[in-house]
Length: 509
Image 1: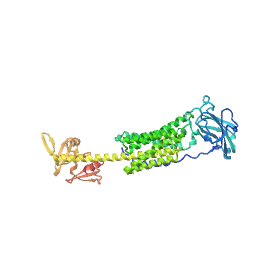
Image 2: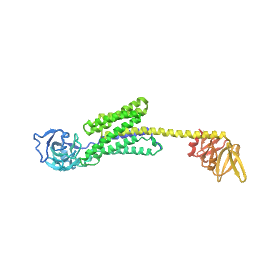
Image 3: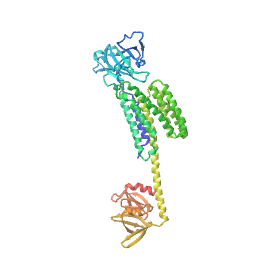
Image 4: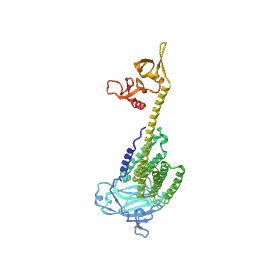
């Protein structure tokens, strides 16, 4: 099995990084004024939003979790929205059941809003409401939203994500090209994992790290869970399960990465436990005390990666090799990107950097396997040469004879006088030093078994004593058989097939 060169893998993964660094295509949306939202508690009929119980706050700070609330926000539209030929829809992305009104008219419901959980019917996480053309007017429009969220076990810091007017399409289309790019990243990770599984079936199975296969699998699982929202819609209670799955995958990936780096950097078992135990404790503590799942997910990966980066730098300080330097540089980029995007790291950028990191680790491992394979080939060639030399020593230490029988007569031929042999029907022609010839009754294969290991079949019809070869020359006369010739010490020439030429050259060097 041949392994591709390391630089080619780097080109592939750098190209992938450029691909996944492209943000989703900007879509044409008209958002409400997120900072000027009137929020009133309670269910029932629409309030007047002037009561003392109402307040003005950010849309993203409004919280329907465990209660029912009313929101009123301005939506400014230009003339083109009013005159547009395409059907419009109002989009609401929120962890809640909802009712949406535009300019006093009900657009639709998503589930059933209720002041208590018993009567609430869970709506979808990302909902869409058709907007009749006669409702849209130029200038100021007013959006009223009734929300409740009782059927979840996680309390999010910001359960409301988007409220905007746009072209009528699938809610998942809001995410643009990003889910499709992430799907290509997922396929890349799965192909990397499949490649490692295939290598596990190769003769170098013991050299395939299960830790790297684990990391690729966890990254693929986390990417799948992360992008479920961009691929399909689901009821809002399932959002909690999705977030928990993402966090668990992030913890497994981060801690698995640290364990893999400790092994890769050749840290002793006792030292690994000394580093790994506090690393796990610190990661779990930071995840527990951090607000928001975005930050929790980021810290679950970044904290072990930072510890691993320190270990890798120590490894580089000890080894001073290009491999260790590349590992440190890749981990530095990984951690730096995480620190610069704490609140949104588990997104397209996250998986681009994760793929780059895993690609670097996989590339270095494949390079190591290539070195092992080249060394194995070199060792096998050395063993073959040694076997030939041993056969030569055996030949000189003991005189050998070949017995030829014709009728009732038997002749003994000194093997040391034998130069080359050629198959001739049911016989084999034996060519001796001094021009003598004999016939051997049998096949070329049976004769090979009786001769010393210095004799090698160089063509389907020719057998040669490699000790008697003076040089190897390519056949320039295509009228004669053989890809090349062996010039023997007596001046005779024996053809060599293309398939066996490399082995012949290795044996006589």
